[in-house]
Image (cartoon, rainbow, N blue to C red; front, side):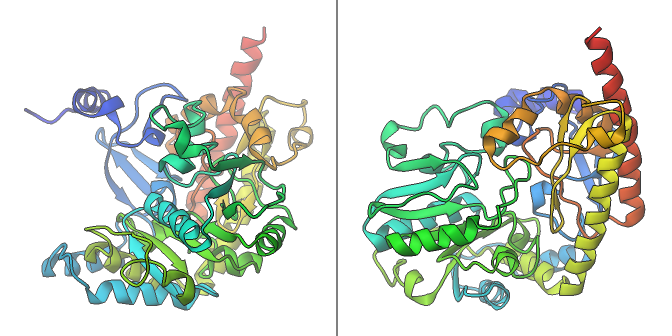
Length: 442
């Protein structure tokens, strides 16, 4: 069979053999409408689809890519590793080196157990917390996504929220009976039944919602008082907002960490981290079982180590400075185009909350308050503006995530000139959407 020529052809072919035509719901265009583009290759800040159209890519594999697509340092590391063998089911030097690199950078993290995904890391962290404390109840926060294991899907953001699902069909009631879902940015009262509190220290699966000034310190104090463990899900923030992740950024040290994305350099990987005493409860030393045939895969560890070695603290500082400027100019361009906007920033993470115009002037359209929890974030996602803006940007060669609950991931490959083009496209797109809304309102 000849290869299809268009995005529509590829998507139709995919639907014959892949449920919904995608291997992850967040790649679906269900919430924005239309047909997904099918990527043929990536190059730095760009992706190129099967039709040859090049887009400025602000998805960057949902944060897994920090240096840019097909960075030579990463591709060379993968090539060298692949030439030696792709998997062994035995210890390798690469997993030791990556584990050392993670522990050297994150304050308080002494050991890590490598797994194959962020979902595995979070699932294992919760199991470990329950095993250590002898308790069953888990506290999570509405709109935070911790992977798709049964017990953590309740109140998940990202694709779960995008598709309008409260959790998932197929998850038995018993699996979530001991999961309490509470509002983000509100410190809960904990009792002696709680094994752990798991949280995104910077919520990035309900668009971008930053923690309030006392939220993380409050969680640390509440866990200490109740004898519960605090878990930071840093699958997104780890090695994205800085070399020390959210711990260095916030000054709050959890008991356990979950890592993923950046530490694999674009290949599947995850990690569960903590101190030596806590992780001693994992098999084979302890009674809490966790395993994986491909854990510590030599290609993934080589790619991840290449990224962590390549990026310096100066790189993080420069990227954060560049992105802060970009977010401000982006907000101004969208507001001047006629849409209401707020674009919160944490390090290089950029949120984008859009709404119909609040008034006729740009200053009035920048008068929105940033969401503080899932309820306030959902109000933006449900107003219908983002799908229009998404397609307007796509027509101008800028690829955002096809869902209003995702953040933008500008990375080290996104130069000032590239981000300037995004700002220009955003201003034009906002004007187009504002005109559409005006016509629709009569």
